Image (cartoon, rainbow, N blue to C red; front, side, top):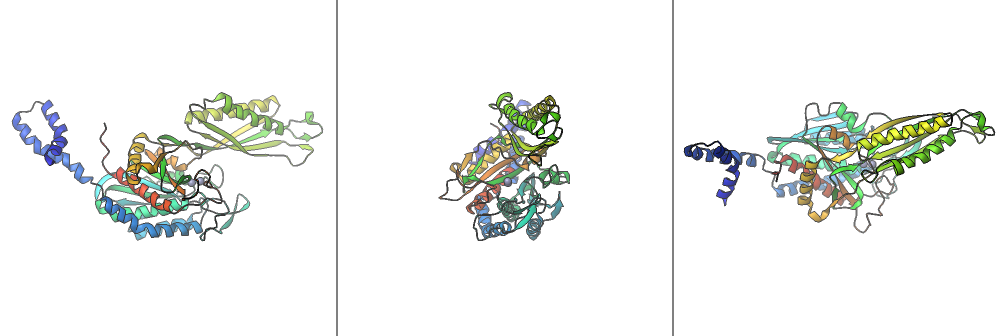
Length: 462
Ligand SMILES: [Zn+2]
Ligand SMILES: [Zn+2]
């Protein structure tokens, strides 16, 4: 049994020796050398025993659930994740790791070093909650309240980032337990403010951490992340190759007219009528000017503000909205068309229009090779029937910022419990978003599977 395997491993070197037309005696000397060389990487990169991985997962499960409940009960809005970051840092220090804190705001990172050299990878979780008033009725529901953009609101982990933090804390503990068997290094990244800046245009989250030198001394060759997702049943995971989540732009259009009496519009320029025409023309950009069959686009207005009184035509109307795209070129094209359309309509009426666009996140796309490897690891760890293909999602993720550093792979972890139809379950960001805690184990198992696969040797190319 062993001899054919050795011959197979030694074959490439022996073929090269034949090509060089070496004498027969040299071949005899080369064979043992070739066998030794071929065996080296296989031995050096042996993955941890699956039973040890299972034991590491089982060992950390009760703690992971307790962390998640504690973080859920104490949610913090983006850029303000002080308590959460301190909890994470304390845990990582307790594992004997050297911890960096305050990266790009409240970001935390640490590196777990395996016993032997190997690939460098990074795993990421986000820590921020949302200005949503919780209505789950959970015994550990949040009662936190705050003021957000001058409105009194509740604070809730309505996107499940509490689960992401707990899963990555647990993954760090499991990897530390297994580090004697690991080849390579794993950076764990806990980032602030994934949901975007509290003030439009502010640089926060993943980009702020990268700009602050997160990868100065550690260049990962791949970066991985996951998101809990209400539209999938707990226990299953989903992913897709290539574009996965849209780029997220926040746009603002200021339409300027000239104020006058509501009874005499011809004495001024009416910015409200211009804004109304822009709103309709904007829909024609998507419906008539962009190849939405090749790459979908969504252009929505969320706010229109103008005027103070029924009989005054105001000076100005302000519209804000969002653009979602799955292609950087399409995104640039739609922004240019929106600006051109708004300016032309405003100028035709004697007014003017000014567009500003803040990009909250670029497009999230899974790298081809990392999707192949990560997908295979997920199927092996969870079983093929629990791994599904995801549709394109018009939501965005600032995880995409990490794609500027290394190839990335991002997947979704089902969070809706048995007996509830995931298609009808309250979505992420809903005040009723309810995470079934079995998602924690599936999340941890998937995170470890992808990380351990990435630390191993790349699969042979067919
Ligand atoms: Zn979210
Ligand atoms: Zn989220």
